[in-house]
Image 1 (cartoon, rainbow, N blue to C red):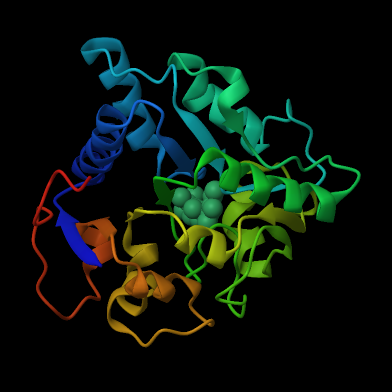
Image 2: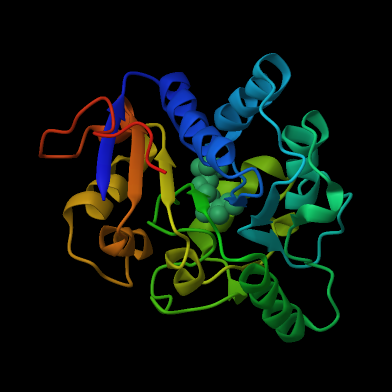
Length: 255
Ligand code: F6R
């Protein structure tokens, strides 16, 4: 695991987009694991720029998203389907058939979760998984206490997570209580991980993730065991780290 501190959220986003673009350039049929939330927005903007200005080609790329709220239809403005199409997919040349996002409207959620896991395996496994982190240390919607070996399934969202995400909804009651999420085991099977964090609100979670003991109570700490993980943070998210970290990864081209 490598920790990199960038001077700003914009610099963090440029580096993470470059790491993803590098995977796609080396493997045009790359399988990308994607995240939603505020943190990856800059990465997606930069990937769109790389596509439009530098011809980064997504035509053969496949994607699998981490999670989706249970009960929100694909066209709901707060659904992760809507988020991904608005913020990335409609701006690049991805084949819609290659896009996979958990279906929060499925009538058979356990069956859907098994199918989702099978699709990842059938595609050849994730080449790189992009991750944000909750202020409680969650990755995807694997809340504190989640099994470190878990697979795709339904999770109840912590009240803290619902409060963090309430900013996107009109009332607290509208914030979904459940989500389908890739498991921690699913995420750890990815050949590469990029975990991003911005802002002082993530400083505690980042300090525990990088320097604390590995524990299911802070699910992101499992990333310490991944052979090819890069944690990229901006200055405010780095303030509780006690060790020194570089501003660049040791090897920019990781693939
Ligand atoms: C989203 C996801 C979540 C977020 C996390 C941080 O797909 O899996 O784990 O990455 O809640 O959210 P933001 O980036 O909005 O702070």
